[in-house]
Image 1 (cartoon, rainbow, N blue to C red):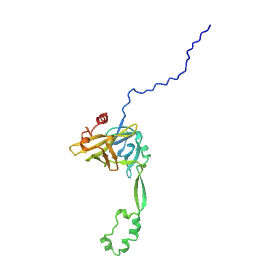
Image 2: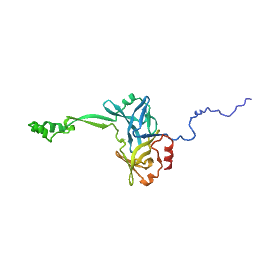
Image 3: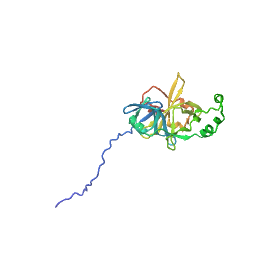
Image 4: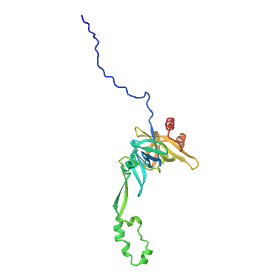
Length: 256
């Protein structure tokens, strides 16, 4: 008599192992410092001039890179996804200068009609001048912007809710001015601001402090307001302005 094994063999699919470390990797940070040199795949491209931020979500969407053109300095919006690595002195991006010039410009220029030209230049003081001496002695000379029939206007290429932060922004504590805004530390993966670099002190005693993002109260066009007073913020460890990117940023953020 033949015996049958009652054990039922089921075909189960075992998932492939994922190469994932047991411990969560530490989030990499990009240091975006103003006037840092921007390096592309073929060498030097330009300088960092502005940082495009969404203040409500604390997300950095673009950096504004300025390069020298034939007719002045041209600025372009570079998505933060193009950044590969950073140091306080350099920002490395994955594109060439030709690729950069094909991106969206930071500002669009267009001309508008100068109404002063019709009102003052056509029907204005020139009709009342009869002699050459009147021309030399007249106080009714127009200003340069009033001479042209059209005026050149620049408009930022920003979406609603975005703000362009420049290096003239001041950092304000609860009880007064803390210093000058010097840059952001941004998460590489989430693009969220993790820290604020503040430059303070005089010519002989310059300091740079790294404030955690949790103390930022509001980001405005010309001012960044903080939730703490100067005494609490000055107790944060200072970092050297002549440094290379390392894990010091994580160490300082862990202290606060």
